[in-house]
Length: 242
Image (cartoon, rainbow, N blue to C red):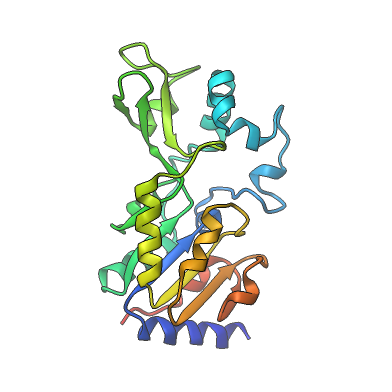
């Protein structure tokens, strides 16, 4: 069954010229970055506060030092390298078949692998800014700081990531929906499709082939034209780009 499904995926990718890839945390697990909702994921580990609370807008401002202790320990995986999924997508873009990667991840691994049109719905750990003057800071600066990182002007530095209680960036959302609307093939991978509004983006796809690749079943399995359960990198690495 897996072999025939992958053969179908190969055929559809060969036939398609406007592929959009919509990915979540499962795309980066093969790079050693834990996901959130699986049995060994971040949300099933024990902390003084639930991770959803720690990673919220109000918690950032009310408990900034605790936020940063957690953030440095669990969210800044600066050692991680792109895996087979990231590299295959960059290859598809280079071949003119992939028009966009829409990602819920904040790790920057798609860009590190060479993909250019990456729409980061939840921001990036590689962008940080002073909440007072707006001066930018690198992820390395945050990682190597201690306590609450401050700008030269004295302002608190905040990661440019979308925390709970915050809205998505309007321009990024518009670009993602435009790309999905143009796509002839959409590959959704490594996401539980439980996080809204991002999970609702798949409803804007009206193309030929809707493919869903995930380790575990999702609420959208019955909507997809093809469902493959497995690791994203292992599956995409079997695709030959022509």
